[in-house]
Image (cartoon, rainbow, N blue to C red; front, top):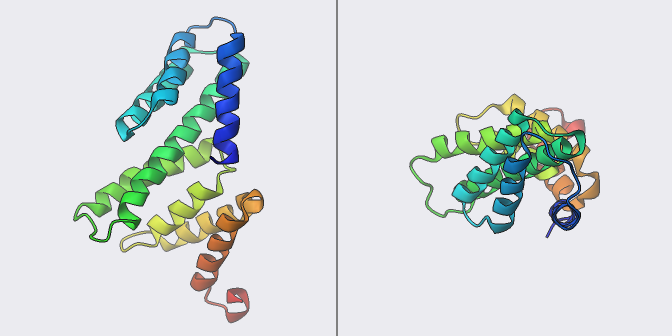
Length: 176
């Protein structure tokens, strides 16, 4: 379990045990999203969490609940994007529809990373997906720079981003 998911789980427990925020129009959807996140096992389950978080945000929440909903939305989008991307990278025989799968993964990762720009894993996966045929090399380089910056707390992710970034550098000094 990563530090981020541990913190999210801890926050969920505090909220569930203390009833930490007041009623607001989106609170019911946020409560359902929290329950769904705890039970999520499939991509479809993660989609339900995303939809419920977005619905809660659209309906309105108090400040504390809104921050929690945005964090849960970001982490769930990133989780779904990473799982989807793994289907491309870890499959010995690429699915013929991998370009469409890449677009789905990128949409989730980009949206999640925009909500929470501290997620080095998301940026590293964005870069890897953009480096595939038909991807955007410049976006891959930007994502690697963001992964390096965000990866201060995750040295393994930062190291992988630096290795990938050095392979893309055209200047020999920068490559080193």
